Amino acid sequence: MAVELNTDSHVRLTFTSGRRAAHLVRGEALFEVEYNEQPFDVISQCGRMRALNTTFAVYARPNGRCDLVVENGRVRTWTRNAHRLVSNQQLALIADRVDVHPLTRTELRRRLAWTQGLLMFENTRLADAVAQVNRYNRTQLVLDPRLANIAIGGRFIATRAHDFAAALRAVRVRAIDGATTKGRVIRLLPDANPVSQ
Image 1: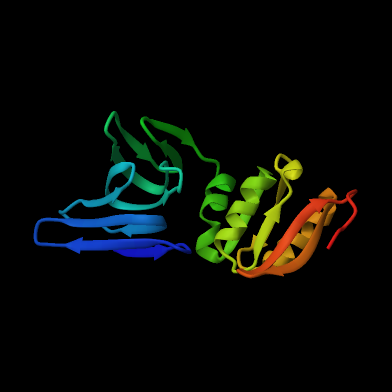
Image 2: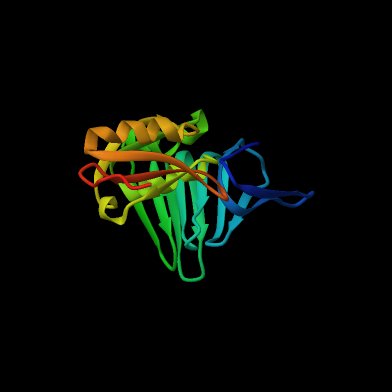
C-alpha cells in the first residue's frame, strides 16, 4: 500500500492484525491499495470508503464535502444517509448523499495532476482556480470579485503563482505584485481599471 499526500494534508494510518485504515484528517491523498485479505478503509469527514486492489484519491474539502476519484478498481463508500459502489474512472461527490459521475481520461488526468506537481483547468471559474493555486503557494492571489466567474483553462506548475498570474493577461486580468504584513500577495484586477497603490 502507498499513500501520496497533497499540500496541507494530514493522514493517520492504523494497521492491526484485523484492520488497515487511514484517517484523512484534512486535505487530499492518493491511495494505491494492493490486494490483501484485509480490506483497506479511509475514514473522512464524509464517512467511510473501503477498497481492495484499487488506486483512488479522496479530497476532504474545507466546506465539509468530499471528492472521491477512482482511477482503477472499485471503492464502496458509506455516509450517514447512503452507500454506493464507485468504479474505475468515476467521481463521487459526497455530502449527505453520494452522486457518482463518469470521468473522461482528460478529466481523470486533470483531477490527479497534483500528483505530478501540476494544476489543470478546463472551463474553470477563475475564483475556483485561484483557490487551488493558493493551496500550493506562500504568495497568495487576491481576486477582485468582478473577475470571479471568468472561465479559464490551461496547465500550470502548482507552485508558480507568479506564472499563473502572468498568464491571466490573456483574459484581460492585470496582476499587481505587492506585500502585506502576512507576506507577498498578487492582486488580480480587471485590466481596464486604473492601478492604485
